[in-house]
Length: 189
Image 1 (cartoon, rainbow, N blue to C red):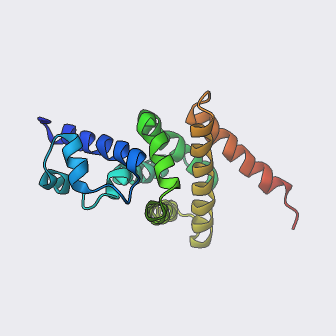
Image 2: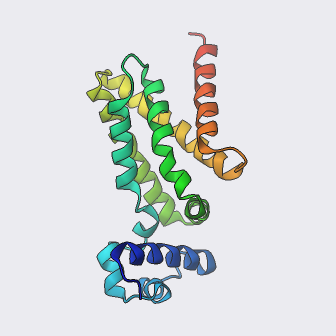
Protein backbone atom coordinates (compact mmCIF):
# COMPACT_ATOMS: atom_id res chain seq x y z
CA UNK A 1 0.00 0.00 0.00
CA UNK A 2 1.51 3.39 -0.97
CA UNK A 3 2.24 5.58 2.05
CA UNK A 4 1.84 9.03 0.48
CA UNK A 5 -0.71 10.63 -1.81
CA UNK A 6 1.99 11.40 -4.37
CA UNK A 7 3.16 7.78 -4.35
CA UNK A 8 -0.42 6.49 -4.75
CA UNK A 9 -0.96 8.92 -7.64
CA UNK A 10 2.24 7.80 -9.37
CA UNK A 11 1.35 4.12 -8.91
CA UNK A 12 -2.17 4.69 -10.26
CA UNK A 13 -0.74 6.39 -13.34
CA UNK A 14 1.75 3.60 -13.94
CA UNK A 15 -0.87 0.89 -13.39
CA UNK A 16 -3.30 2.59 -15.76
CA UNK A 17 -0.69 2.97 -18.47
CA UNK A 18 0.34 -0.69 -18.17
CA UNK A 19 -3.26 -1.90 -18.30
CA UNK A 20 -4.13 0.36 -21.23
CA UNK A 21 -1.15 -1.07 -23.11
CA UNK A 22 -2.05 -4.67 -22.22
CA UNK A 23 -5.85 -4.60 -22.60
CA UNK A 24 -6.72 -1.32 -24.22
CA UNK A 25 -8.34 1.73 -22.68
CA UNK A 26 -11.95 0.65 -23.23
CA UNK A 27 -11.39 -2.78 -21.67
CA UNK A 28 -9.79 -1.42 -18.49
CA UNK A 29 -11.82 -0.43 -15.42
CA UNK A 30 -10.92 1.93 -12.60
CA UNK A 31 -11.24 -1.02 -10.18
CA UNK A 32 -8.56 -2.90 -12.15
CA UNK A 33 -6.28 0.14 -12.15
CA UNK A 34 -6.70 0.56 -8.40
CA UNK A 35 -6.05 -3.14 -7.75
CA UNK A 36 -2.88 -3.10 -9.87
CA UNK A 37 -1.69 -0.02 -7.96
CA UNK A 38 -2.41 -1.64 -4.60
CA UNK A 39 -5.12 0.80 -3.54
CA UNK A 40 -8.91 0.76 -3.44
CA UNK A 41 -11.17 2.31 -6.05
CA UNK A 42 -12.11 5.21 -3.74
CA UNK A 43 -8.43 6.17 -3.67
CA UNK A 44 -8.43 6.23 -7.46
CA UNK A 45 -11.32 8.72 -7.46
CA UNK A 46 -9.64 10.88 -4.82
CA UNK A 47 -6.85 11.43 -7.33
CA UNK A 48 -8.62 11.36 -10.70
CA UNK A 49 -12.18 12.19 -11.80
CA UNK A 50 -12.17 9.45 -14.46
CA UNK A 51 -9.87 6.95 -16.12
CA UNK A 52 -8.99 9.34 -18.97
CA UNK A 53 -7.53 11.94 -16.65
CA UNK A 54 -4.84 9.53 -15.46
CA UNK A 55 -3.00 10.24 -18.72
CA UNK A 56 -3.59 14.01 -18.66
CA UNK A 57 -2.61 14.75 -15.10
CA UNK A 58 0.24 17.16 -15.90
CA UNK A 59 -1.89 19.67 -17.81
CA UNK A 60 -2.17 22.15 -14.91
CA UNK A 61 1.60 22.10 -14.36
CA UNK A 62 2.28 22.56 -18.07
CA UNK A 63 -0.26 25.40 -18.30
CA UNK A 64 1.26 27.17 -15.29
CA UNK A 65 4.79 26.74 -16.63
CA UNK A 66 3.85 28.04 -20.09
CA UNK A 67 1.95 31.05 -18.71
CA UNK A 68 4.86 31.90 -16.42
CA UNK A 69 7.49 31.53 -19.14
CA UNK A 70 5.54 33.61 -21.66
CA UNK A 71 5.20 36.35 -19.03
CA UNK A 72 8.89 36.15 -18.10
CA UNK A 73 10.29 36.01 -21.64
CA UNK A 74 12.72 38.84 -22.44
CA UNK A 75 11.14 42.04 -23.75
CA UNK A 76 11.40 42.76 -27.46
CA UNK A 77 10.97 39.17 -28.68
CA UNK A 78 8.56 38.47 -31.52
CA UNK A 79 5.54 36.34 -30.49
CA UNK A 80 6.91 33.09 -31.95
CA UNK A 81 10.24 33.68 -30.24
CA UNK A 82 8.42 34.25 -26.95
CA UNK A 83 6.72 30.90 -27.48
CA UNK A 84 9.97 29.16 -28.33
CA UNK A 85 11.41 30.53 -25.09
CA UNK A 86 8.36 29.28 -23.14
CA UNK A 87 8.22 25.86 -24.79
CA UNK A 88 11.95 25.30 -24.23
CA UNK A 89 11.58 26.00 -20.52
CA UNK A 90 8.29 24.13 -20.07
CA UNK A 91 9.49 21.22 -22.21
CA UNK A 92 11.64 20.12 -19.29
CA UNK A 93 8.46 18.77 -17.70
CA UNK A 94 8.09 16.34 -20.61
CA UNK A 95 11.75 15.40 -20.63
CA UNK A 96 11.63 14.53 -16.94
CA UNK A 97 8.67 12.23 -17.69
CA UNK A 98 9.98 10.55 -20.84
CA UNK A 99 9.42 6.97 -19.56
CA UNK A 100 5.74 7.85 -19.14
CA UNK A 101 5.38 10.23 -22.10
CA UNK A 102 6.36 7.80 -24.84
CA UNK A 103 3.90 4.97 -24.05
CA UNK A 104 1.25 7.54 -23.09
CA UNK A 105 1.33 9.02 -26.60
CA UNK A 106 1.10 5.54 -28.11
CA UNK A 107 -2.01 4.71 -26.06
CA UNK A 108 -3.63 8.04 -26.97
CA UNK A 109 -2.91 7.48 -30.66
CA UNK A 110 -4.96 4.26 -30.78
CA UNK A 111 -7.85 5.35 -28.51
CA UNK A 112 -10.52 7.67 -29.98
CA UNK A 113 -11.80 8.83 -26.56
CA UNK A 114 -8.27 9.77 -25.53
CA UNK A 115 -7.53 11.49 -28.84
CA UNK A 116 -10.65 13.57 -28.32
CA UNK A 117 -9.54 14.49 -24.79
CA UNK A 118 -6.03 15.28 -26.07
CA UNK A 119 -7.47 17.67 -28.66
CA UNK A 120 -9.61 19.39 -26.03
CA UNK A 121 -6.63 19.77 -23.71
CA UNK A 122 -4.49 21.11 -26.57
CA UNK A 123 -7.18 23.67 -27.42
CA UNK A 124 -7.33 24.76 -23.80
CA UNK A 125 -3.54 25.10 -23.56
CA UNK A 126 -3.42 26.97 -26.87
CA UNK A 127 -5.99 29.46 -25.59
CA UNK A 128 -4.01 29.91 -22.36
CA UNK A 129 -0.86 30.64 -24.38
CA UNK A 130 -2.77 33.10 -26.57
CA UNK A 131 -4.04 34.87 -23.45
CA UNK A 132 -0.50 35.06 -22.06
CA UNK A 133 0.63 36.66 -25.33
CA UNK A 134 -2.25 39.16 -25.17
CA UNK A 135 -1.11 40.12 -21.67
CA UNK A 136 2.28 40.94 -23.20
CA UNK A 137 0.56 43.33 -25.57
CA UNK A 138 0.33 41.11 -28.64
CA UNK A 139 -2.70 42.00 -30.76
CA UNK A 140 -5.59 39.57 -30.28
CA UNK A 141 -5.61 38.25 -33.87
CA UNK A 142 -1.84 37.69 -33.87
CA UNK A 143 -1.82 36.17 -30.38
CA UNK A 144 -4.31 33.50 -31.46
CA UNK A 145 -2.46 32.71 -34.66
CA UNK A 146 0.92 32.61 -32.92
CA UNK A 147 -0.44 30.35 -30.16
CA UNK A 148 -1.96 27.90 -32.63
CA UNK A 149 1.14 27.88 -34.81
CA UNK A 150 3.46 27.64 -31.84
CA UNK A 151 1.47 24.79 -30.31
CA UNK A 152 1.60 22.91 -33.63
CA UNK A 153 5.39 23.35 -33.70
CA UNK A 154 5.64 22.20 -30.07
CA UNK A 155 3.53 19.12 -30.82
CA UNK A 156 5.62 18.40 -33.92
CA UNK A 157 8.83 18.70 -31.90
CA UNK A 158 7.49 16.47 -29.11
CA UNK A 159 6.57 13.74 -31.61
CA UNK A 160 9.99 14.03 -33.27
CA UNK A 161 11.58 13.70 -29.82
CA UNK A 162 9.63 10.48 -29.19
CA UNK A 163 10.49 9.16 -32.67
CA UNK A 164 14.17 10.22 -32.51
CA UNK A 165 15.33 9.96 -28.91
CA UNK A 166 18.99 10.54 -29.80
CA UNK A 167 18.26 14.30 -29.63
CA UNK A 168 16.70 16.04 -26.67
CA UNK A 169 13.39 17.88 -26.88
CA UNK A 170 15.15 21.23 -26.86
CA UNK A 171 17.00 20.39 -30.09
CA UNK A 172 13.74 19.33 -31.74
CA UNK A 173 12.05 22.55 -30.59
CA UNK A 174 14.84 24.68 -32.05
CA UNK A 175 14.59 22.79 -35.32
CA UNK A 176 10.78 23.09 -35.51
CA UNK A 177 10.84 26.82 -34.84
CA UNK A 178 13.69 27.31 -37.33
CA UNK A 179 11.49 25.53 -39.87
CA UNK A 180 8.63 27.91 -39.03
CA UNK A 181 10.86 30.91 -39.64
CA UNK A 182 12.04 29.36 -42.92
CA UNK A 183 8.45 28.79 -44.04
CA UNK A 184 7.45 32.34 -43.14
CA UNK A 185 10.48 33.83 -44.94
CA UNK A 186 9.84 31.74 -48.06
CA UNK A 187 6.24 32.87 -48.46
CA UNK A 188 5.41 35.43 -51.09
CA UNK A 189 2.33 37.57 -50.87
